[in-house]
Image 1 (tube, rainbow, N blue to C red):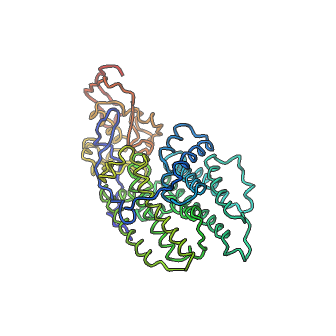
Image 2 (cartoon, rainbow, N blue to C red):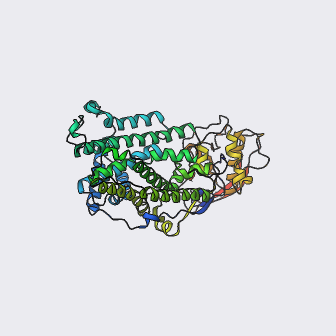
Image 3 (cartoon, rainbow, N blue to C red):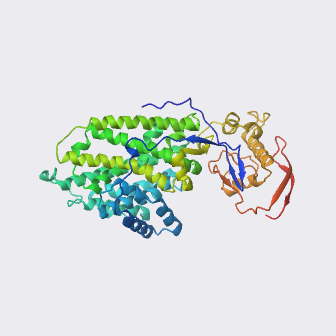
Amino acid sequence: MALSIASPANLPLSVSGYSRDGDHVSTNRVTVTIPNLFVSFLANQPKLNPNYEVVRGESVSWIQRMCDLDEQMTRKISKTDFSFFMAIVAPSADVTSLRTLCDWGNWVFPYDDMFDNENLKNEPKKAMDTMRSLLSIMHANENEATIDQAGRMSIIKVHDTIWARLKRKSPFGRRRPTEPELDSFAYIFLGVQRRFAETMTSYALGALQHVNDGFDGRVVSPEEMLSTRRQSAGVTPLFALIEYANKLTIPDYIFEHESIKQIEAISTDIVVLQNDVLSYYKEESEGVPYNVLVACRLAGQSAQEAFDTVGALLEKRYQDLDHALAGLPRWGEPIDTDIQRYIQGIQNIAVANVHWSFRSARYFGKMSEAVRQTRKLSVLAAPELSRHYLSTDNRDKILALLGICEDGAELVPEEIGYQYPAEIIAANITKALIQKTGYLDFILINSKYEVTQSEGTLPTWTPDWVSPKIPSYIYLQAKRPRKAQRVLSSAELPIGSGILRVQGAIIGKY
């Protein structure tokens, strides 16, 4: 299904329309209605694996020891509680199998975050080296023993143990099976290993594509974003883990059938689109652009239009899945029974995703229940993420504010236009913000966020507003005593001058 979107527009960061909440400067926000995610097969109450509570604690303690995590990170993983997700995905798995799934889930979030919003997001070469290290053991064949363990990151060693558990399911290890063994139970588990390795490779390629797109400043279409998200979301490795956890004996040729491929593809889209709706609020605040909703907004859609677009895509996928299931052929027993268990497991991923997302504090924090009940969510009126992308003229990123911010004319006066260079426009925005709020905090932004100014002639007190290092939520002096007051009587900046003259007084002690 093609996405219906407005004409592309390179929308800028909205730095106006903020409200002062203590020391928090927030931008204009709008309330949107998110799609109803508890529809179709997702409306049913999920079944939970009875081993969940036991395995949950063991898994968190294990990854803490393996990675030597500090108390804060351990608490974060425990609070995220991906074991609950896996307990819905595989409600009938035994303790050992469920533990493997939970360990993979508790591994994937901190690992994936390195590429989304931590040190690897701006380091394409380092990101690629990290992914190669992760995949090397799964593609090592007989040379696995030659991999340098001393140089492997601890979080990659965690995944190595998960891979080892998948391998142990096959008594043949890495050797090629003989002809009589090709249809055997053991060889099927070699297929599980292969499918897991292939889907993990696909995940790696998707995550690296995001890193490269972000580093290059590419604005991708909603269609292209969805295509990459099918890989980077990490949904398809779960399909092989479903086989593993349920000890399914489905021959390889079944997975090559068009009906199975179609069910897998549609189900992947459902989970990806669900996830982009559910994670948008969190990722918006963190500046993570790898989301179909972000792509829709950067293509010119309003916030509500973007959520409606994704909602329509989800509705279409539900219909497509119903048709695909109705056309599923029969192969005879015991294959048909295992196929039904496999498909149920795939659907369980989507069910787990919505129930876990609202139960966990990862996406909505304390607002989870309110968002679930009302389907209302407050988001930025203008897509902040657009400033991370390329523009031939930095003035475009600033002056375009006039078109989308209700107070844009206050921040970028009419007399300040394209006849002036970007540094003069940026300086006048800073002056306007100081005048409007009465605070001088804005002059600290560059030093706080270690910004290297893109415009060499910017005054040192002027934030480089086009820098991606400056977040959408700015905390300047978090410990400012409430009793302190300020009186700013004036702020003057003659056009062409780099000297800001302010007059005022501070009443109270900071």
